[in-house]
Image (cartoon, rainbow, N blue to C red):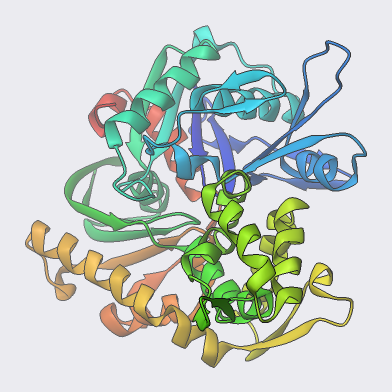
Length: 430
């Protein structure tokens, strides 16, 4: 059997799973400081070693540590997947070398395999790659994203590449436990996108087959929820909503100057943008300059990732408590803000409505009603948010809704699909 690897390259985390000859699977695992984990944070850093040497690249927790602890010059890149379908992202310069999207993606994957201690012979491996139903970003170019994906894998030497919708991978993983024909809605709720897949699974004489019924999605998920916390709790302390003087009038600082700070993966671009230069020019006329000075300091000191981590921890805590504290030392040693679940759910309510409307569209295109759905399988980190779970329970009934292996189910299903004789039938054109 051809060795098969299922790859879920996510906005926040990346998971790789290999199919084994006995019909089972094995997740690629990483070890750091005594801890073993299968879900690798999708972050990449480059440490400048100068003296004519190429920069040292790291991924996951090693990249985070290199960024936070190194005394050298470090470039930190996160949420790389968010740029895949963006024609505005033409690449970035890193210590004198130009890196296109595919260079960054290939570097991340190469380092990931090395950190896992996995020896991969690309020439003998079938790579089954998950792709979102809808790519994130403003006016995403799907064809561009897929071309970049394929170029990245070919840089690593892979030739046998199949692309499968991410929720289809999750559906296939879940369907292994079915003992009867079932119509399934898979909701893949990740960091950058929410994707839906509607499938009818058939079981006959121990053989599993499926008929795709419909799909849909929207570029809203966990990162958007993080944005709501930052926008409502952090940015007012950094000058959003404050005033500046111009020609004898007091005017509000344009809110758009703060938006990229709230979307932490855009900070590396924002730092060299016209908007950031405009913010610096406004400083001398601001009525609360200390707030804007703090804003500028946080951007220049690359505090986007530490802020994201603090916000994500607060969001996670709200999944099990009615309130949680957001602590972020760079805002001041005494900074603490209490975030209630009630407030959080009110902030994300418009996003939940958009996610629901995207599901409406997917059901309508498939010619299905809620009553036609036998099971709802939720996967991805954002599926832990209580308001998200409740929205699906209200619509389909709690008894139909389930989850499990939320961070690994997509890659697991992709690996299982790749090991099948009919694997190509499950794939989509690149």
